[in-house]
Amino acid sequence: MITIEGLCKDYGPRSAIRDLSFEVRQGEVLGFLGPNGAGKTTTMKIITAFMPPTSGRVSVMGFDTVKDALKARRCIGYLPENNPLYNDLKVDTFLAFAAGAKGVKSGRRKKQVTEVMQSCGLVEVGHRLIGRLSKGFRQRVGLAQALINDPPVLVLDEPTIGLDPKQIYEIRHLIKDVAKERTIVLSSHILPEVSQLCDRVAIINKGAIVAIDRPENLTNGLRDHTSIMVRVGRNVAEAVRIIGAIPGVINVSQAEDGSLIIDAGRDLDLRPAIVRQLVAADIDLYEITRRDLSLEEIFMRLITEEAASA
Amino acid sequence: MRSLYLKELRLYFTAPIFYAVAGIFLIIAGIFFSNAMLRESMFAAQIAQYQVNTPVGLTEVVIQPVFDGLSILILFLVPLFSMRLLAEEKAQGTIELLFTYPLTDTALVAAKYLAGLTVLVILIAFSGVYMGILAFLSPVDWGVVLSSYLGLILLTGSFLALGLFASSLTRNQIIAAVTSFGLILIFWIMGGLAEYLASGASSKIASELALLSHLTSFLKGMLVLKDAAYYLFFSLFFLLLTLRVLESRRWRG
Image 1 (tube, each protein chain N blue to C red):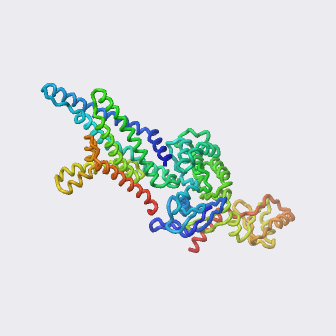
Image 2: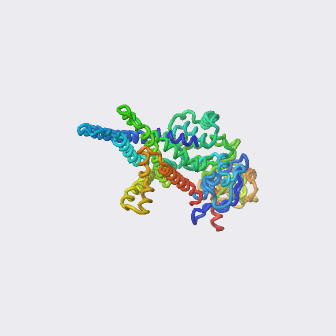
Image 3: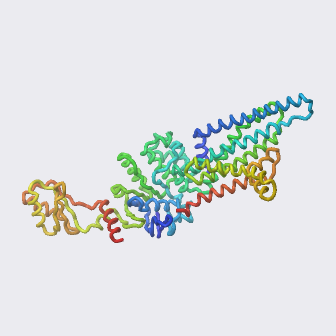
């Protein structure tokens, strides 16, 4: 688990993150979400003891990343942004090196390398040069080196960036697999990914956390009304009139694709009432769904609110 | 640290540059050697002709000039070996892995330095072939040969420490090579500067700082503590500077 307290990092006069505090609990997957330049990578570099913060402190499994840097690093598997690897080494040689450098006892190294290569699906490319691998395989090698000493904490900086959809699916699957017994921090700007993989999401903008919560709570917390989408056949105008008369409906509007968007009061589910009324009026009903705010909308809303209040 | 050292060695021996440089090294060393041998035979002929009864010094005519030549050759070759040590890690971004693995900066610098030194010692050891040929033709003063090798390795270690320092300053291998070459040259021309200054304290300082002037005693078969200490401190000084450069990431933006 990771504790971050009052973290600040200045690059010269520019401050990359300011007063960041949060906790990643044991066994939790925390998604770090934010636009480019928000301070995600900086925060991760501080967590992994790559560099110290300007002020504040981070402890990983109880080890301070400045005072006990080596002990903290021993608990962490890190996949850096852009996944740097030794292109002139073969996959198995590189992993053996990583195992040694990360303090895996020499007797266990071989076994550990074999295990990680199996779990990351690298067996078939074990003897190939890393520089000749496809991006998907490179990403697996990056993940494999992070996992090589079986660390309790994983820090993954944009683990699926630049991959094709199939590779993204595979890497996500892999992350889900290894997440079972580990504490993970992963950054991304792909929102569905974060909501799929993460137990909690921290939204960061301009170096500060704007929201941190479970993905579903984030969606609920920001909703000031319920939104329902209805698609009907002919008689659209009639449908608008009928729905508008239902108590609780605030507004009915027609979207560009012809569907109707109904805004109702918060925590009010009018779907049964709408269906009943439309059927009673003999209007063809093709589709009805409750629209949840997507993380994108939350994200945009939080970031624009932030800008407005600043 | 051992893993990092072995990784460095592996990278040296998988890259073609080692074999290219080793080939060039052996060819040029061979030219030095055959030149010296020709000179030796010429002297021998003259001595025979004029009935001079002094024995021809193999040490002065062959061994010393060959090692003098080797020291200059190494001066040119070390930057080619040292340039990649840290600059390549920075350019590829892999330094981020090393900095987040549980390795101390000292272990990192030590592993890099020792790997480079191992490769260079192997390279220098190849030139032992020529000494073998010499020994086959005539008795050789092995004491001088061994002390010359020791001096050469100490000198190489100093060049390498300079090169590693240069490599820590940049992510561009060419710049690293040029910088280390320039630094080595500065310490080389100190010797010439000392002669130019002729006398006085400044001349003394310049000649003591010059990298090559401390090799002379080794090539004569003498082990002078002062000269060995010079090379060791020189290397240590630049290794410490390298360490400081690596640590600067902690306080630089």
